[in-house]
Image (cartoon, rainbow, N blue to C red):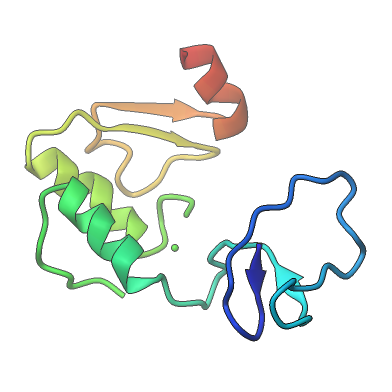
Length: 114
């Protein structure tokens, strides 16, 4: 979870979470530590992703395989020699580019692959 004021990141696995979880540091509201549509990815996270696929050109501005910058990362990884698998509910513009495209929910498909 991430604080809406001081940006402190914590982990809370209690079930259920309090209806309005509060930050232990400043008392402000906590929110999930995720990137929602319209939000900016943390630069260090984005840079680590680009490093992992061997790309240093950050020419994209979060993912169902159609939202930038994540949508272009599979293509870049494939260009750099990686084998790329796509798991998505429906085909994307990149489905024919990847080594394999699997239709379904990632939470259901990944355990089957493992």
